[in-house]
Image (tube, rainbow, N blue to C red; front, side):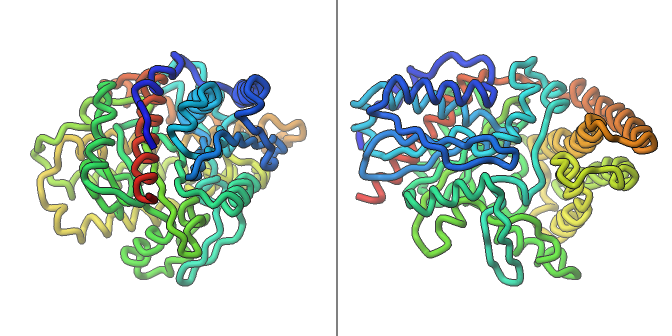
Length: 462
């Protein structure tokens, strides 16, 4: 495998907005029509709402790679990266030959959820506009976390229709490399991977700096992440979450605290087959404090526990509203299902509190980025529960047959939630010094990291 990464990156278009589902599919069909000898476009199946899920096969190399976008539907950077990569591969046979991979490209694995996020796809790119139009399904409805699993006392076997499409593809092509194209909403860059070494980590860490994007050097996404290097972690799975809950919630069976299933790499490697996987997380919005490792005058334990306390305050606000409107919610309302899952978030907060109280390293001074993550970034994510419940109310109010009593309850709840949502957003807007990162830069970071890792995997197989 011999590649000129800079040449490939130079071909990334100047994206200034995100494609809708319709635009994305139109571009895939146009590419397949223009390059019929290079692009094989097939329908993998249908989504919950009946939308087609397409896969492009490009190239015929000796290694196989599966790349899929929107494993979570509020994460469309990957769809744009795949739009760029598929066009580059289709247009240039020399690049296809040099890369020596057979590429299976699914631009969007959750097309229904992606459509529910389209309200912010064209801007303005602010955290307020992003959150007002945010949607992310319940854990067991997410493409990434509804693969079948059987671990200790927990079994899950309800993959979504979208996940079933990826399962069939994984079972058929048996990829050497899986690149699930995640991205965060706010923070800095970080990675999860199944394999690696220090030289690889340094290559990845150098990529965001080319675009003045910082590394996320504060708190890891979940407490049980295993750090390999700055902002580089071992790939985590549902089994890791089970072990964590088993340890820090000892009074409750861990299986009762689980929802959803495994991720794609856990599924692909369930029979012991070695599968290499990378996740490159990067944000839409970045504040320079995400990379500030200077020490604060507060302990890490203090700020983690303060973050838990703040999350419980938001939870205490919206949980009674949730209880009041639940009787009027349609069982297929996806925003309601997402809020319903979050109505049990007290267990997760309690586990995090128990972890913070018992972890010896928590007594050390917190870095500025750790303070920032706990006291500001976490507020960004905590507010999304309020957003989802407000959107659930709006979804119900769109129905034609809403009884008068239900309509009044739902309208009042919507207004109460929206007021709190805006109050929290005003707080964040006034205290964050954030930048909306250029989409093209984010695409290039995700693409370059993927090519670096593909080259690494190729070398392992020689």
